[in-house]
Amino acid sequence: MTQKKVTLWTRQDLKSLDELNKNGVIRITQDHITEKFDIISEYISELYQWFVKAASQRVPKPEGVEYPIWCSVSEENMLRPTEETVVYVVEVDESEIIYFDSVKWDYVLNHLYIPTDEADDGAYREEMKRRGHKDIYSFFEKRTAHFYPQERKQIIDSWVRIFDIDRWDVFRVQANIWEIKPDMIKEIIRCQE
Image 1: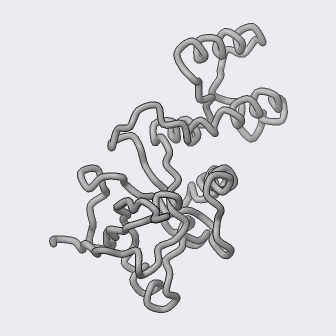
Image 2: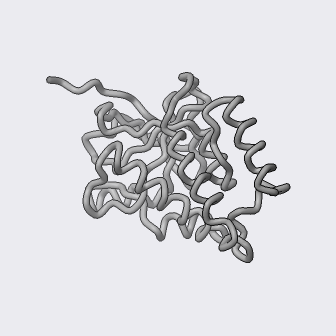
């Protein structure tokens, strides 16, 4: 049975061209994360590690891959190339794509509970009030996190909802793939093309 092919767009550092030529594949490593996110790279790495574990349960991660490659699902919403980057237009088997809701990902980035709907959000907030929590934004602060293991677990358990696409919106839905191989690349867009 033939897999449905999907076109995705991903902006990567110019150095990725050298990596592709040298290794025959583009993969995101801890060094990439550190370079890109600088002083917040440790924070981002922790959340990406959660993402990798959860995403691997949906699409198995190839051996040797550390982190996924973020992609846009539409040309209209893709990150444009800059002088230091290129955009790869890739064609991928749909079975290799991990779709997620980027608005819900913002909840993860901010260590927040992802509600299933407005009623669940209201119930969660009421539950936190009943437990005596006036501030639902600080359960992950390093100096106090150890006081809130149950609250942290409840929040982290909700994060898998990023993979629940409630509505398909090209400005909200994003995709991840584990790697880019030469045969996947349909075009490379450079700055000012």
